[in-house]
Image 1 (cartoon, helix red, strand yellow):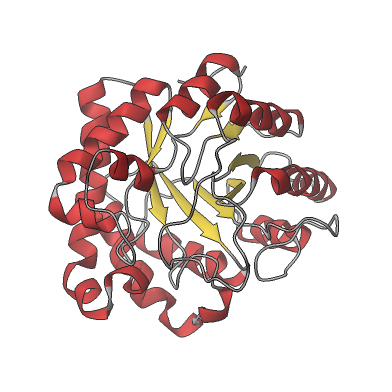
Image 2 (cartoon, one colour):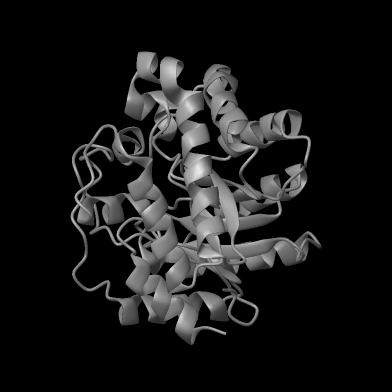
Length: 303
């Protein structure tokens, strides 16, 4: 449900699949469960709905060549996206709840890897996902974006392929080292520049995800200030952090399963969420390692 003026998002799919004994490893990540048994994916969605999420996100994050490999993506990418969309939509229908489905469009070239970005391949990778998901989703969520250009190109493609003009949300992932006091994407680009670019292309919400909760507050402040300066306060802002332990920069993301923080309990995460709401966030959820128990705490206490 939406609690007061706060929209409650869901939490991380992958680690919930792992807890249920579903196949889960790198490089396929959460795509393995989708290929093996989409029913377990639907059940995780239903658990997040029962916990109070008013938006659930399709399990399409790993449906890219980076995770599946080129041949499997070419053969199965679009069909798996359709399966992911159907699992989410069926979960909503079976739950009987008023819940929206967000279509996840992931970083097309790997999490935290702006160095691998290739503009010439965006359409070829994103189009099958958009085509497979569009019949089942209510909103697009272009998430864990490490640089500015990728979501700009993805939004242009969504505008061409989805004539229903659904809301388009972008979630950026941040540098986890906030020692400088500056809020930056993992590409090194500033949050202020990212916000300005998103205003220019007409997104409906700007969020921050898949980074340490400690760095999100500054990003929200920078976002709110930039939106005010541009007369764009109508754009929503939000956050959904992960529970990863800080990762050394010399160990690439996507290699193995990251260690989880022991201190990221539901009550501790709720305190971070309260801070984000104080900074103007109206959309709150969780990313990797944030489970239904965390979402239940958000739903019960915020608002």
